Image (tube, rainbow, N blue to C red):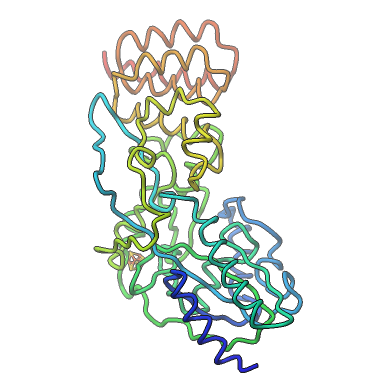
Length: 379
Ligand code: SF4
């Protein structure tokens, strides 16, 4: 079998099925990544969402012993919403980051990888592979960088000259000895916009992220959000993307190549108050197909409550008081108390005082005290 010809045929097929970029990488150990992962873990900078051991994450042959090459793919996603609903006083809306718009990209990219696998299966008798998108052991970014999809920016994201960093990545380890492509040379140069713009200092240096400080990560946690980050989220309820928005490579980038990634304005910018009373069933049917629903509704509701406090949304006060009094989840009761304090209405402070008499959870009481502390600002 002439693998060079098969590679050309596969590239052609990938275009026909709507893959925006495809590249090929060797299965050599990702040695630099391995030491980087060890450093990140020692520094406490890892998110904890990662899968597999450092060996599995950096040695492709551990995942597929017959591995000979890795195919990397990228799909561009849109950055602008048509008929963008405004978030205004009395009708505040939250925001899902762009990487959660449309149908969950894990499903869409996995389908594309399956199509590539079917194509190769037909051509090769003994075809073996293992494919993954984001949640697999391999680092999508390390593979994409090696395969020439883009270069690794100081914001730790893969940036391509055509699509910027607004791309979803996936890969397939195969037993076919495809010739590897060359990594891209382009780079950030002297630019430091993402490092300067990061509101929490999570980009501790060029190309190094402390995930524990990253707002995108923090929107996905289930406990109380650290106090010092609450005012920085604005109306983001899932993800955060300032380090992408400020990047010159993303200027004017807005690709609508894939119907599945088109944002439904009412889903990606939902009314914050409506989100607070949504049932599990309704949440699943409305938001279940979005990547941003993977942690369930609680983190999104917690973030929505923070956003309402941030905007001092008086119209949401009754809903927040009810949550503080009745919600069975301490994170929701406590965050609601904090948010009521931020809004700063007299009756809100009185409601906190009344609810505090009944409250038994120490963490919630702590949040109520923070809410009551804010009363001083309004006296
Ligand atoms: Fe690189 Fe500048 Fe983009 Fe950061 S903002 S990734 S430094 S080009």
